[in-house]
Length: 456
Image (cartoon, rainbow, N blue to C red):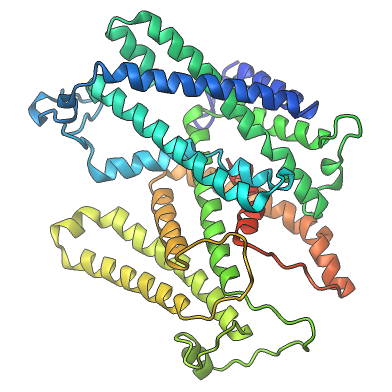
């Protein structure tokens, strides 16, 4: 069944479609059983990770991190770099990070299932930080051992660990690693399919998606239709696209979603809240007032309408400056290192705009809402997050941006034709009921979390 098109897979992967549909059916008919299976797979996966790190340390050789350039093989078909600790340089590390960013996806399931937590104020922040730490240690340990066991240019990209153990004369170890890989895939797939029906349910309840997709089955207590529809779309994408295309799509969707979360943290931290007992405050705007508000010359202790609007404009401009700065670094990085005046001037201009915008945001009055958990070092930490995410996105290939644009256009079409007219927030405005306020930065991440899976 060949697919004669350069932008799709060579053939439809019916096995991938069947596996995803099987997991979707399992989730549709009960969560407890699926959770037990997920816990088992995760336990096996962690045991295999520890086995790889411990067993590989006996064959580790630090010389593999100091390979001289003259010993690196030369090939016309493939670039093996220059040897040493970073054979492809900083640019190669960044490009690898842009593609492998999806390895950290999964901790957001904690926030997606926040409504089902008993003490979300304490458990969600702890679970997010702990899961990120475990994933980092696992990836760092496994990749370090892998590159210490065998030179990087001799690795098998498709199945590195079975190949390495086979070369070392440990054929039994490659089967243990293969079992762990299968369990890891099952756990990862279950973790990816698990939150999507809940996101669909939340969006359907808010009127942003079709109501029937959020209907909960009385027998199984799950959004049955939403789960099956999500599985159908997910399986179809896995069936017709190549793995590399899906990885890049997941990476760009996740990076954009996290950038939006960071932007919303900035907006909410400086949000103006109209007191319930006061009349609606009118926006007093003039060019002089706007310029004075950039440095908060009046010394307002609490946000005003003008300060909130100022932050909204500054955050939008900050996104533009980030694209300008990171694009210039990506395009003229070598020229900047060589000291060319034009390239340096462009980089300095972009950096000055980025820093000046963050300084102006930091001068604005902060909201006095009492939060159970809030992001520290605002606006610097969210600003750096956006900057890095933009740079990683710009390192993805052209066709990934084209597919991403089509995906975004499809979502905006649904919102413009249905969601905007049937949303509960719109009905509240029409009926004169004030909109509900968000009470923490972590809720912002929860609301925006659906983009991670919808775009990935």
